[in-house]
Image 1 (spheres, rainbow, N blue to C red):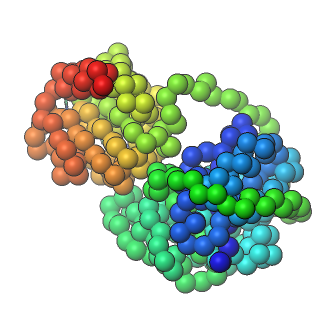
Image 2 (cartoon, rainbow, N blue to C red):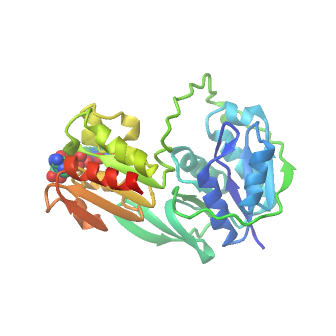
Length: 316
Ligand code: FAD
């Protein structure tokens, strides 16, 4: 079976959910090999990668790999592409993943597809482009297909792989060492899931009306175990922090369920959420554009609808 490299996303020694999704997807197309960049791989992390189908685990454990910004990961993958001749390389379509993918494509003279939401036989990808305005099917025609998959595009399912470990030594070029990381500041990890990884996102817009009223959105999110998002109108007004903005100039999310409350559905907001599997809109204006996109809609005041929804969810 043809080998497919999967770049592992990890934090504090833990494998992120998106990697389990990529391994699950890679299993349908070939034999997945996980690529762990940086020090700190644990026995638990290796077991998790194998549990989700990694037949091989390449470990490049040098401090240097994560001591510099992004470029070393592209060099590591380029080296593995040259040595192992994989059928494809999968990365997460996150800000870092897309940058790694682009750099790797240049180094290996290959085509790259980003923002993919599906990948099938022959590495034909379903891709969301032009700020989410158009969906296309694309296929890489040159070199090794490099595909950046959006988080939540595949449901992760365990199915054991061999998990054979192989150490990889990488000699970084001077260019890869151009930007060194001088300090890492750990962000407070809240109880809610990370926005781009969450299976459910509850977002509020201008219709929420104030910073205080975002507690209504948060209460529903907590009842559902969801992440909280916001439109740019809400973040620009200072009602919610910018890091939670969803859209063209914010985060891109592809959850199983996206609840948009008091959001009109501007094209720039859609760009960040329209690949969600199911969309529910709550809006007072029945002609709000978000209803064109929504699978389910409630015409009503979010200050009445959302608390009732929260109460119902909490009862179950
Ligand atoms: P509005 O468009 O004002 O809509 C508010 C909605 O709330 C209305 O539909 C109204 O009917 C409804 N409403 C009011 N009161 C209630 C209530 N009590 N209950 C229920 N519904 C109610 N926007 C983003 O979101 N993300 C981006 O990343 C982004 N990037 C941009 C980049 C550029 C270059 C530009 C030009 C714009 C960008 N925007 C972005 C802004 C975007 O164009 C819209 O202005 C923004 O999305 C509007 O936010 P909103 O839907 O919350 O507000």
